[in-house]
Length: 638
Figure (cartoon, rainbow, N blue to C red):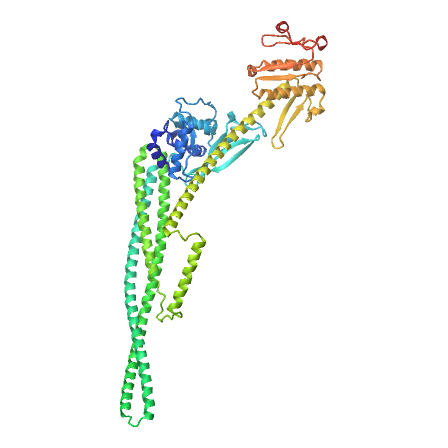
């Protein structure tokens, strides 16, 4: 975050023409007497608290490159702006009857103060104690309302609080001649000015100690479960081996009994054909005894086998129980890992807040980094233990129920199936052009592709951050443009009305932004003569209204030359004299000292007196001209 950026700037200080200044919030201090408005100040300048200022585009590109190398997320990438490194504060107006935001903070750094004035316009933002006080700063009748001193916004604090304990604020502003407000701003914003650093530090340390204790308990429990599991597995293996030995003995006895039974049948068959059967009878008796011995031995083996199976069943249940407990312990380890990650994120956020509050907390930042390292070690140990438990669980998952498994395929059949599967794998590898690529090379290609993917993701995040910054800048400039547009509309309407008032009438200019139309309203001495359509007026009235309209627009434009050609053609004598006087008075006003006016008329100008700032040029009649000619120098001098 911010600490990494500051460290990168320190390591590359020699590469900058002028050392970057930031974060800006480090240089902003709230005046104690205006502490109730700290949430209002934070809400207005929140986009610039973590911003950095550089003196030239080269330094900006270098700083952005360092941020890109740090691979910061969009939320952790601050704004970088260019401003001249001046030693003189901007001259800002002082409003006597309103509290300006610029008066509530102390900014010792000249560059930071000038950036806040240029970017956030803190001198034109007003503060009020409540909604009623904010409404008292609105001027003008409904439909033509504006804030006092043409301010941009009026902020006032709310009584309720947000999710992070911060005070919510609202702001009031004017738009299209009416008022609008934005309520309960800053719900998820974490307070940065006036926070209790020591309390946050102690809370963070307490959570870290609790995490250590939870980890130690989970580790001990995991070790105990591992020991129980190993002991039960050893007992299970011994019983399983004994049961296998009994099965082998039983198979031998069955085979021996079957062999003896066949021999007895052969002897019985031989008795019918032999004369002396005494030897055969002796052999038969011996075989009967052997068969009886095998039967008794088989019965004994069956009893032992059933006894061992009965003893194995509790072990299987115990193993299943231990397996379930181990799985629960694994889940607890995962939950603990998530908690550690959550604590890690909170500590990182707390570290950024510490950096914003001053260099005097550097020692505490080092302690936070130490805690982060310890938490990372705990995370690695937790992951290692979880991996060991997972491997142990995967090794023993008993699925044998005491009954021999019968394999229905011979060894040759299994080998043929394995060969077919290997051939299929080989064909797929050739099909995917992987025949000559080893596993290590494929893993290297995968790792390279992942690195390229992550680099592109970081570039996308940086581009999105720049886009958000540009959108905020466009929105800010659009707000300034709308304010300037409303000012031009008011000035043009005021000038138009003042010009008409000199002839005993009044009027207004109607600017319809939605329909993109500009219309005039002219009212004579009586209300019945109100006219929305200039075509319904007489020739003189229409010419004078048009003249007033042109003068109103001209007063709002910054062109050095203004030319009117045959403006009095359709006027009567009285209207013409009044119009010429109005034009001369308008040209001689203080606001037009730097402009030059040229009026062209075919009418008589005997009533107009030339002066030091007014010259009259008369052209010769076309009937007296012999061919094309120009005004002589003598005539111009006269």
